[in-house]
Length: 277
Image 1 (cartoon, rainbow, N blue to C red):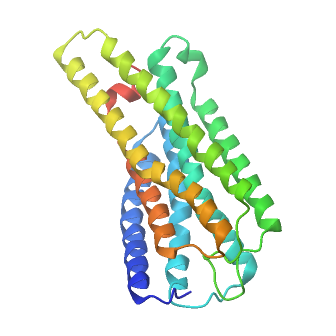
Image 2: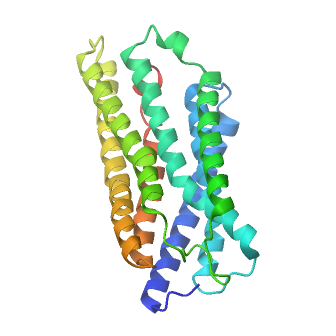
């Protein structure tokens, strides 16, 4: 649906198209690696496949999102509600999986002996399955009682989101996982710094691991902290008026999607982290 501002429309179309093109390319490469190059199922592979599936769900909705920037919605309420559920669930799902990855790394590095019994691909799959079940159940519950659109638009909210509900999503779906990720990342860095180095190569790997954990944490905070802050601010804006700024809302959401992609890919770059130093 047109926003009425040609500059905003051009910005939205350009931004969404770039996200769709580059997201499709990088996710296709990642799917190829994890599905055809890796033979053994590990905790890493399970978590990353879950994250890739979440990314692919988002990419599936983007062509429809791009279409609605210029045209009325032609596919009816049910299809619109389904796409909206996938579109908005993706960010919280990705935050949850990235948090699970950090927790898994924390256990592997902080408690290497206990990790042998606490960690396994099956347990990783179970954790991801529970997260998916919880978020899908929440979205189905909300979709059944929600009125998302006015009949001609989609991906554009026409009613005010209840303030408490938005705050619950922000606190439990974003802020709490962020605190957990900060704690786990800090503990991983401290543990790696205290580890005895037996060779120059191992020392280089540990330094590289610490650098990547720091970078990943910085990117996560840079991208998802504005998302959380924006949600809290949006609660106030939506409580005052029926429509928020389409541009500011989308920038907040797109920055979050970029951060989601960068954060997940950085976890793959360090051998020390993935081999339970």
